[in-house]
Image (cartoon, rainbow, N blue to C red; front, side):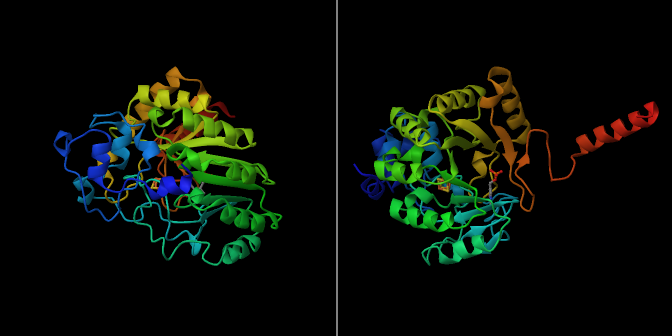
Length: 352
Ligand SMILES: *Cc1c(COP(=O)(O)O)cnc(C)c1O
Ligand code: SF4
C-alpha cells in the first residue's frame, strides 16, 4: 500500500483499535476516551507491532486516548516548552544559537498521547501557506542561521515535491550549512521511505541529519530497519530522540533494548527527553530521581555511544538542559556552584 493510502486508512476510533488488537474495553485498566479533542490516529502498520491481547502493550499505551487525559495537573500547561515566545513569524521558531526550526505542517502520521504540541495552534502558526516564501526570506535575512530543522507536525507528512520546493529555496541561501529533519515517520509508517523520497534525500547538497523518534524496541521491526538502512545509505546521519514514559519505557531493560535495536538499524541514541509538562500527559511522567537512576544503570550496561542524554526542555533556556545532574537553568546548579567554590577555596589555600 502506498503511504498516502496508509495514512488515509489509519485507525481513528478507540473501539476500532481495541478490536484490531483483540481487546475488550473491560480488559483495560482504565476508561478510554471516545470523544477527545486530540483524536486518535494510528497507521495499521504500527498497530501490527502491538502485542495481541495485551492491555499494557507499550505501543498501545502511547496512542490510546484515556479519560485520564482530561484531568488537569498542577504545573501542566498548553505550551510547556515556550514555543509561543520563540515564534519569529508563523511557523518559524528560534530558541537556540544558529538553528531555526520550521513548523512545516501540523499533520502527523500518528497522534502520540504525550505530544508536547498536542495543543499547538497549527492553523495560525504553520509555515508554507505561501509556498515557503516568507520562511525562506526570514532565513535568508539572518546570516546567523547555519542549521535549518524541518519539524512539525511531521515534515514527512508533506509529499516529496513539496519538500523539494522547500529545499530548492534553502539551497540558494549560502549561510545554511546543515539540514536536519525531525520525523517519526520512518518508525510509524516505513512505507513513506519510498524511492521518490530517497532520491530527494540523496540529492540534497548538505550533510543531512535525520532525528527519528522511537520509544520502545518493539517499534523497530524488519520493515522499519530496512527503511532506516536505506536512509543511511543515502548519506544521512541518523539519530533518535525518545521520551521517557511511565508504563512504556521506564525500565533499564527496555531502554537498553531500544538502544540495541536502534544501533542495529544504523541509528544512534541522541536525547532521552523528560516529559514536557503538557496538559493531558501527566500520567506518563517519570520523576527526575528515577530517570537519573535509569540512565545511570544504562551507563553501567552499554557503551557510552548507546546511552542517550537525559534532557528536560526549560522554556527560555539557551539549550536543552541536562536532567542528569539536576541542572535547572543555563547557569550553575547549586551542586556545581558548590564545587567551584570549593575549588576556589582550595586554590586559595595552595596558591594556584
Ligand atoms: C529542540 C529544538 C532544537 C534542537 O535542539 P538541539 O539541542 O540542537 O537538538 C532547535 N530549535 C528548537 C526550537 C527546538 O525546540
Ligand atoms: S509524532 Fe511527534 S509531533 Fe506528532 S504527535 Fe507524535 S510526538 Fe507529537
